[in-house]
Image 1: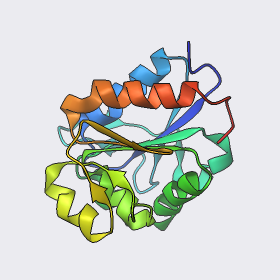
Image 2: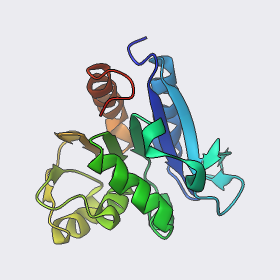
Image 3: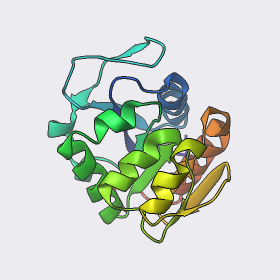
Length: 179
């Protein structure tokens, strides 16, 4: 249980990519972490691109950076809805500023752009947002996983095994509650 004592937030909004929320959710729990789904508060549940609902454990208004060791941002089209909620953007920005793990996959790079944390950083994401990432100053790489200090990014569902393995590896190196 390499993540015993770790607290991880997974952000949720409508139109999330099913695998990109549920695969990390269960994989990180399997590794011993406490995983909380943090919703935007716009709806009591959020439906995936394929209609699978997720009921958040808490809303972004009650989520505190100090309570979490990492945040995972799934893709799909949910990041475009997430970034319309200033509290969600601020949470991601503050997690990064605190040096805590910020993990984004697929279209989640949109949240990183809105949080203003991509300039001069190597990262990856789904190929259709490559231009958005580059325009925001990121150094885009077409790789399954790219790590820059506390930032972990991946491209698509096929990269989920590498993505989760990398998140676990990063968090296992740090004592719980420490950036």
